[in-house]
Amino acid sequence: MLDIRIEKTQNPKPLPTEDNPLTFGTIFTDHMFIMNYETGKGWFDPRIVPYQPLQLEPSSMVFHYGQEMFEGLKAYKTEDNRTLLFRPNKNIERANNTNKRICIPQIPEEDFLQAIKAVVKMDEAWIPTKPGTSLYIRPFIIATDPFLGVRPSDTYMFIIILSPVGAYYKEGLNPVKIWIEDEYVRAVKGGLGEAKTGANYCASLASQVKAHDAGYSQVLWLDGVERKYIEEVGAMNIFFKINGTVVTPMLNGSILPGVTRDSVINLCKHWGIPVEERRISVDELYDAAKSGALEEVFGTGTAAVISPVGELRFENHMLKIGDGGIGELSQKLYDTVTGIQLGKLKDELGWVVEV
Ligand code: COI
Image (cartoon, rainbow, N blue to C red; front, side, top):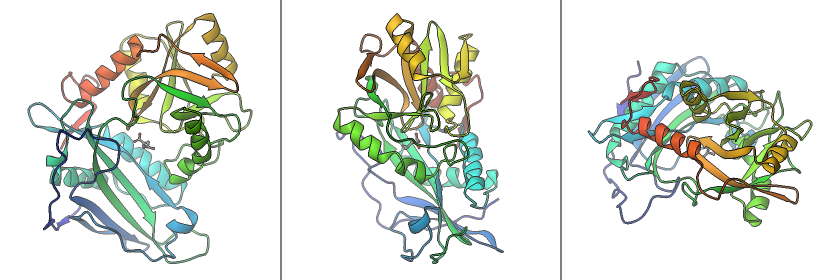
């Protein structure tokens, strides 16, 4: 149990008003959680303080070798004014898996959850309630040793910031266009692909710029070895509905194990829809699109929730999916996931945690 010290802001910021629609990740609440680590001492000084710039040595290791992990989860306000988190333990478990992979010390699960709950509680008034909005929670850990050699740091900061958000994509729930990348790769088995660390997102930028310039929202990555099998999208996992079966790339060591991915697989199974986690090649996808077997494509992510895909581009081929609207299953998944998150639907799978 953490003994969290609290320093309240003396200058609360105005809450966002309903007239300006929320975008993603541009506004931050009044407070943040911080806790430090030193080898030999462990995690110490858990505190909630006013949201403010950090003071760090320019030599801090995170700036040079990128030893950092981050997570993303959301808090929602129910109609009866309760605050709910969606499957926070899955994020905490993944955070500690990332920590293990990049030599950051573990944070006990119960302390991690306590920290999230405490800072969310503190800034509860910032949780937006308009449809499609939520409070995005961004926990992260950075290496802070002032040192230019390459080794794991001996000191770290664990920080949680909060941001009231709207849709991740400007398209909202309208289908996005996705570029299948054939030049760069994101990750390979044995690399960092299944860890949630900045390096993976940095590796994606050049392709993302190229895709954006061509009018596409995101990049779909192929496997780094054969460049044949589908892996994931920049900020989402990916699903295909082919002849009534839901297919998603299996977790193979280079794909991020998404919490929404896991939730969608579980929901489909719960509804009796066949789900396959397996390798799927671009060729198979192309054939399925040509024969009319490819019924729906959608991405899943905490930020994006369920995001329908309306077009895939591979080399010079454009694959149009469906009729340009949101598919039936994508809509049902979106309604169910958000319904559970908002406490509107019965939480049959035991996913929500009250703050
Ligand atoms: C999330 O979906 O929460 C993520 O962390 C993706 C991020 C790049 C926005």
